[in-house]
Length: 233
Image 1 (cartoon, rainbow, N blue to C red):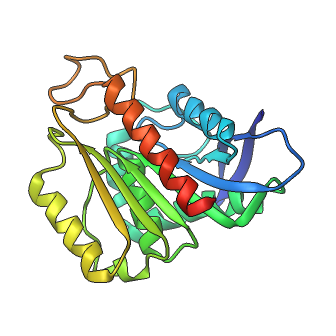
Image 2 (spheres, rainbow, N blue to C red):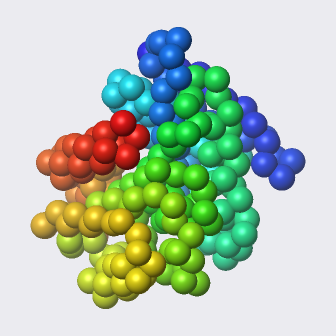
């Protein structure tokens, strides 16, 4: 495979993503990777490399500008989520960069996201983006304004059953939204698992209900792999 930083602009701001792609002359399906509140960290670059190993061209997009890893991510995501138009637009900018890459078959695009990035992939899908499927890992499930009817692909949601940020009630609201919109969806719960279960840097005790879980991480990745085999071919 090969990897490279990818520079682009969003509303005049310099953005820096990270691309990983199979070393082949043929075009391949593309997968947009949307980071959590920490920005473009090494664990997300590793996800892109693993996706490239599966035969996908993966772009970790920039959420905040400059390709930075940030310490004030909570405030930044709150600001971004307060402006739905801009929130969706920054995600669409990343998707457009991925789709335009010469290595990518733009007719076969998917997206994954972690934590706030997972919430963002749902918003991107609700905007009507041409995505065959989206996957949220321990992602927030905040409902939109009934716009699930605009979702064009399938939805896979992977959540720890003991995630303190995602209540059973929130799961039911999300399920109802997708069901009423006629979206093809699946939700998998991992028992005894909390938030950020895919991030090895999240050690037990850092924050109540937050911890890396190697088994849940492996299971969720396998679930995503099967999903993309189905929707991207």
